[in-house]
Length: 241
Ligand code: MN
Image (cartoon, rainbow, N blue to C red):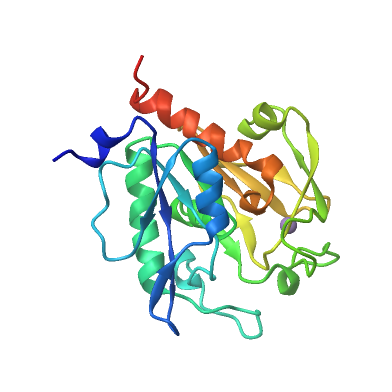
């Protein structure tokens, strides 16, 4: 008998799953699994009602349905193009996120996952960016997910700039919500030209990065996953010499 930690030298990356009511299945897109695997991590699906597994080295908060607006202090407005909400997933991810903050675990938040990081840090969201802002770009692309449709510009003093080495680059875009006011420990490190926040980072924790786009569909953005995994290796000292 050996424990999961003893079975591998690779960092174990918890990834939050989505519950589909219709099929009664927890699932995660295979592109997330591939991105973690090819970047050197072991993906481990996290589902609501689990205890938080203490052996995970880092976390990917995945995309999915809207976060319940009550969790950032708002009642749902009408006609906000809202998706289904999953109270179990929301509650589990918020407690998981606060646990990860307390343990300084490296975190990558993607789309809803970025929004979740912000709400866990007492920030707020636009329930629907189109109803609450004017003159926006297209952020809900109809072309295939692997196509990049709009630019983002990042600040130079950011993880993003260290990772990509340039301030402006193209991303895909599959969201109708966004960060409206930042959590108390978060800074916006990338925006699109219409002012929508496209990335947030924690001011003091070593590696907490949220991106509004979907790097799991962009093989040249897998560097976000490999950076997360490298940060897990240096954090937990898992690498054997
Ligand atoms: Mn966008």
